Length: 290
Image (cartoon, rainbow, N blue to C red; front, side, top):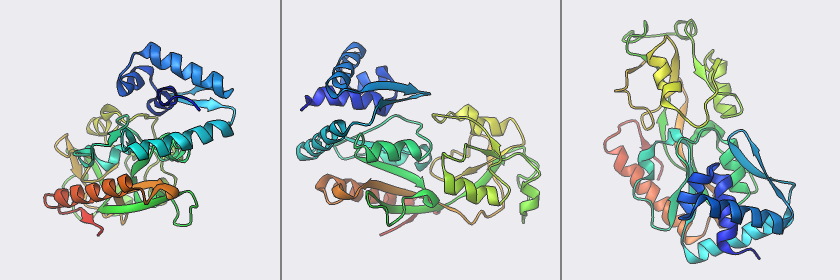
């Protein structure tokens, strides 16, 4: 069995995608992260491979999977350094006052593919998602989603956008202007819902989230973007347009089914519900699911 700090270094490098961030998370030097990750890979007969901003291991290793399972159970047994990832558009406020056992991951996470992979591989222990349409199916045998709250999705443009302040807008009004979107793989079902309405059509590359590539770009153009009341500060030169999308965003905690009854998962879920209830007192659009 690998020493806990050896596997933690390997998986923190994969989780954060950066030796510097992994070192900060593990309270050690970058050289220690590199050395331990290399040791883990050698012991397991695998290699570290970087694709874009992400690290991963090749080839598939059943031994690594078993090691991760044991180490995850150890983390829950000790109730310490449990790993929580969160979608940027779930809003950073939801991560305040986390239970002591939990630590949050890299900021600016977008898309569902990477956190789902990390969750299924037991590199992280829980994930907060924001897109209701892309929650795992109820029949998924490996992961389960606990929906905490919902809020309506809006479309926003810059305050100087020709449609800002207009009422009774139609789909035809919106589709005459650029509509920023991400690659469909980021949020497949959500993106498809918007695409069916003629939106989400001007694809940009952004990973992780960057203000200047999203809200900042909209304030300097005639483009529009989808927004919700948790993640988007409308004081940053944006105006919600008078057009109902008929789509909800959400706050949902996704965990592995075999861990959902763990005390620390239930404690985290209770804390997130209390946090959402407190936020709802100041946010009339947030509906908490009890």
